[in-house]
Amino acid sequence: MKSSGVLFALLIAMKLIPGCTGPGLPYEVVDDYMFVQKEDRRNDSTAWELVWEDEFDRNALDTAHWSKIGLYTSERLLENFPDVRTDKNAWRKIRNNWSSYMCSTNPEVVQFRDGNILLRGIIHKDTSGWDNRPYHTGGIWTYQKFAFQYGRLEVRARLDPAYGAWPAIWLIPQKKIYPDQHNGEIDIMERLNHDPFVYQTIHSHWNLNLKLESPQRFTTAQIDTTGYNVYSIAWYPDKISFAVNGKISFEYGRIPGGGTFQWPFDQPFFLIVDQQLEGWPGDVTRPEELPIDMAVDWVRLYQ
Image (tube, rainbow, N blue to C red; front, top):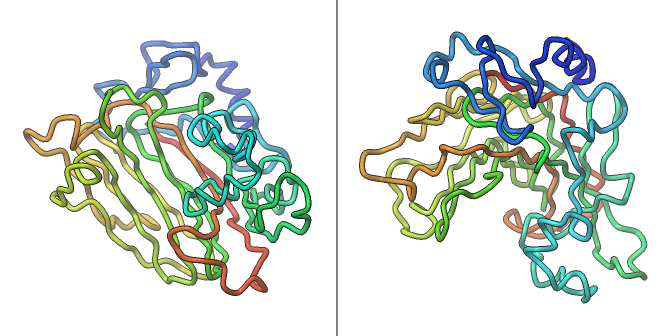
């Protein structure tokens, strides 16, 4: 199936889209957009089948499932950083945050070319107005439009290097069902600067708040720095397996007695794919390297 539009047209015809359920489907649908893998399929990855894909070949964003991310336009970010509504310099206070340069209104940061979506990091040339940020970056997410629980997610992408570059593919909870604790984050891929490897990481209350480092929660994996790589996770009820190009890099397992502090990964998560600048990798020290592209060929979910 080539395009997400064709795939979902077929799913509509087969009644396999959100809002529809049936005994033969690999998932149950919650709130019309969250795909929760059926219990009898969660431990047998050999039986998993393709349930959703986007190949980004329609020269337009599938807004039924994705939204562009913008510091000044995404309500979730505005709730986290309300000062940016009234103070044009408030972004400076969150400069190390991944979202500080995200822009949904600049058409240059999200483009389509050769069957890819390009998420870009660029110099913002006009800083004389309200938006006086020096850079703009492109990102998309499936927040409140598509989320899933369990299964295998794969993303094929090529990453341009630059000092200060921080492309990422990651998952965070749609609803945060556990109060008064961190509800988890799954970083499928993060690359810094010109590194020949990527980071793959788990975040939870266990390590972020309690500072417990066992079980292993991250690794690095070598990549093809000039071509495309496939970044993936296989998410089970008791472990998450990370891989690059089909080779498992590490597994994060659920441990007895860890509770939701260690394993909040029993709820639907949504997907973020974005090109970030500065923050963790440091400053953009060679602006002549910009613009840079995170070229995403496709996203696929199996359950």
